[in-house]
Image 1 (cartoon, rainbow, N blue to C red):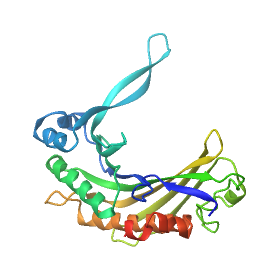
Image 2: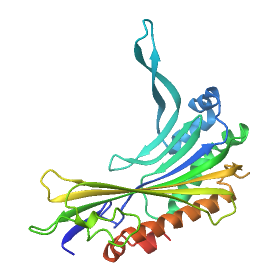
Image 3: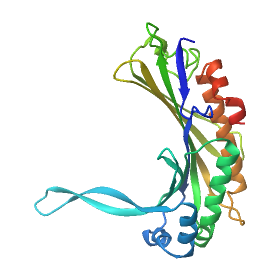
Image 4: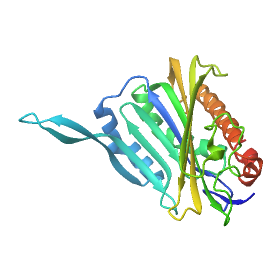
Length: 278
């Protein structure tokens, strides 16, 4: 290996910057329903776990007097967040009229992330049950990051990081010594008990430092499943419904298979891929 490769959290050999769970609501909830989370018992319980709260705002273009355009800001939801030592979100909940998302920014093991998601959903479950909130699509998104530093006089290509035979990368990446972006997307049939289809998007971005000695590589993988049926988000105990729990396990393994195909064997050993994503 002619390049030094450092995963995002080099201290524990972990390349995962964050994991995002998105639940697309089958029917949008009214704004006043979302605004219920701005106060009350559920708000207080969420704030204990996720102490920084803020409004989710959206910028809209509107026509004003005289026909000119102006920007109007509207409140569309609530955020509840907890930050880690790096200054990144360690755990966050975002509730909008059309979707609920949970981001986990401190990844050590899949089981730990799942437990964090379950804990947030259970805190929110009374509100979910009260308003009969269901989903018809869901997404698991991973963001991995590496810093690649090249030895003096060495090739600046990324062959030490990426498997040249991976089907998910632009074919000429091994010939490139500059920045590049690769996007690969495809549909497939799932192997779990929810009728619908899965869209996998694999985005790879390589950005060279100003001095040219290092490259920051981000791998974003988005696994979105569109269901033909309306699904329960949580079970009666408030945890993730059994159907969705099984589906997310499948998406997790899908992610593991793709990242395993992208990376070289030494890099997979560096980040302990098999043990961290089992």
